[in-house]
Amino acid sequence: MKFRPIHTRRAFEEICQRIREQLALGVLKPGDKLPPERELAQQLGVSRNVLREALRSLEMAGVLRLQKGVKGGAFIREGDTSRMNDVVRDMLSLGTISLRELSEARIQVLDLAVRLACERARPSDFRALEANIERTELATGEGRLLDRVECSREFYRLLALSTGNKVIAMIMDSVTEIHMRFVYAKVASSGASSPRLSEKRRQFLSALRARDVAAATRLMRGHLESVQRMLELDPGAMSLHVALAEMQPGVPR
Picture 1: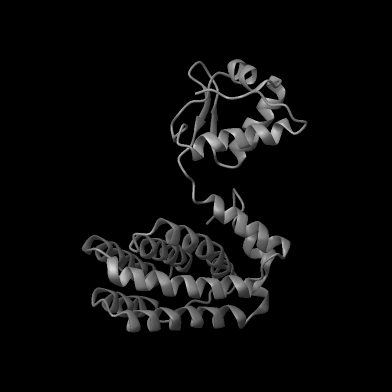
Picture 2: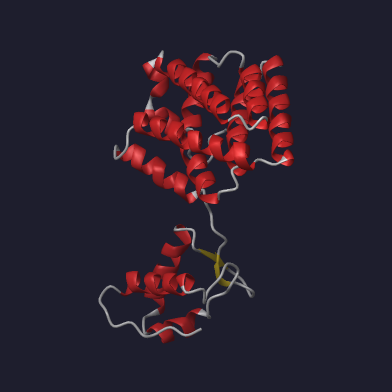
């Protein structure tokens, strides 16, 4: 593994680009360790301070893991799909996208996810969804509505996994995670919840097991639209800053 010296005023960006190029070429892979800082700075022809700035940037981007100590160094990380959540959340906060666009995208993505799940879901996926529905039922019976919201988040994650498509799962997780923050804020503030949730989940699972795309899609769409109506009954529940605050580190989920 060798890096060519950099001859540019934008050394910081160029370092990041060079390392990403090595990833794209397959020279670097998850778990690999970059050369020691002094050696890497010499290869690139930059100061160690500039190199450290680039490494910190790649760490924040989720590309590197910087570890201190005798066995420390800069390591290539496994892909972290949760980074996409941060991007979408920031775009929502900045007004680049609207909540209605997010909800519309979620419905469309779930349509595709349901179709793929009907084709590809395995018995183990059905068992996982069934266990989730049982936990949802228990949380509902005991009045643990916020726990039920967490069950819903897990339900969509399990459904995404059953598609067998990592890209669809990543997109679905991103739009669902943010949308569930609004549901969480609504339930926490007013105690509102979707009636007959467990029953609806069982009907959907039955359609999924039967590989009935039309029925499964119709049931999922009907549920998503009812949740959206519940949220829109109280505009305050759709407050962007309240819901996004729920996503910040240190805030209970």
